Image (tube, rainbow, N blue to C red):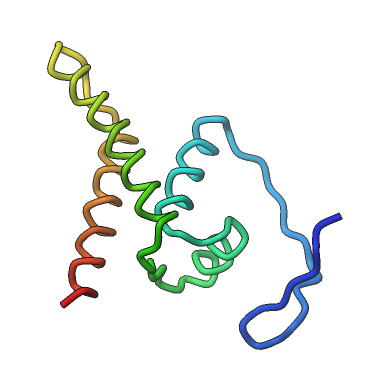
Length: 108
């Protein structure tokens, strides 16, 4: 059983929400959660309530950015050999650009 936790207003999170996704959707979800630096639970709650995701730069986020950039580099090498660009790669690349852009603004 998972540990009980509280929301930011010190209320117990006692309700469960569950749904099914495809393996491809799960893989994409894993990528965007890693890039956000949030837990899966916190990410889903923020997005469900239509709140902006604020990424705080930390080693975990930087590692996720590095890994995603390596994956994209591999895909770009494949594409340069005549392959097609998938929408998922473009979405991930856009998310990385937005994340890095936001972190750059935060450093100013």
